[in-house]
Amino acid sequence: MRLRGLLQGFAAFLSLGAVSLGAAPVAMAQPVGNVVVIGDSYAANPDNQRHWAAKIPGADGSSFLADYPSNGACLQSPDNYPRQLAARTGLNVADWSCAGLTSWSSIGMVQKAIARGDINPQTRSVVLAVGFNNHWPSNTRASGTGFDFGRIGDRYVADMHTAAAKIREVAPHTKIIIAGMLAMSEPNGAQRFCLINVVPNAPLGIPVPLLQQVENNTRNFQERAAREIGATFVDIKTASASHNTCAKDSERWVSGLVDTTTTHYNMPYHPSRAGSGFVAQELAKVV
Image (cartoon, rainbow, N blue to C red; front, side):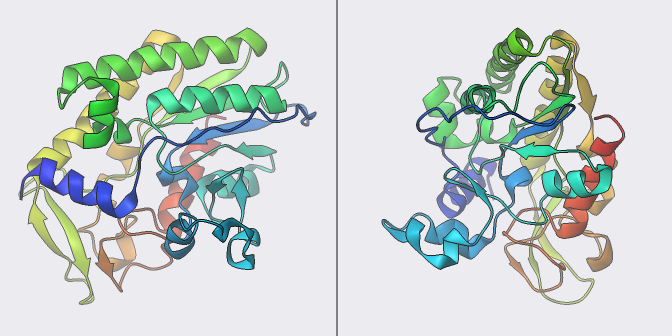
């Protein structure tokens, strides 16, 4: 299995392209000391059926979608890590996560959060949790980086400089946090990615060492960006390495494709409730 083919398959399944940011929202006052999370689908983590239903023209008015948490056109799970972070800390957390965000489309989310007043001079911290999607085939074409790790990283770092500048323009004392993502594949050995989890404690996977390289590249350029922009980096990947898709059922924090043994997950290849809880726990230490 080649990573590019795997990524293309994921891309077709998840439709993780850049999102439409829409019109600027009306500014509204936020409580002093709020937190803002701007992240991709690992943060938003919406229900898979609703994620796909939302792509059907005219479906946005249905109760199936209307009764589900969202921010604009971005569906968000009620147990995703921004909401678990709010419950854990008691802080007001503005969730601007959205499936498909890249480093460049996250800049638009920063601008929308500023326009609404969620990012303001009293904001306590802003969490930026994007980067992995920069490697998707459609996004490497859109950004012009190609599938070149160095160029992908350079683009990400440049975008984080832009995002940080926009945040600090209105909130100069706000803490900026770059959050990594939960581990997907095994860090060592065969470096399997386990797509099928149906037999208890017997995950079935295939060796995809290049996927592990993509995960490492994401972590590395996130750490580099944090260092350059003066942000705090939270290395979720390393801390969750033993909880990847190939872990035992009770220890697995990211689901497979066909998966009946990972508990409480919303989308294939995405965090379980426990995985989101771990990210919330780690962010609670620094926000």
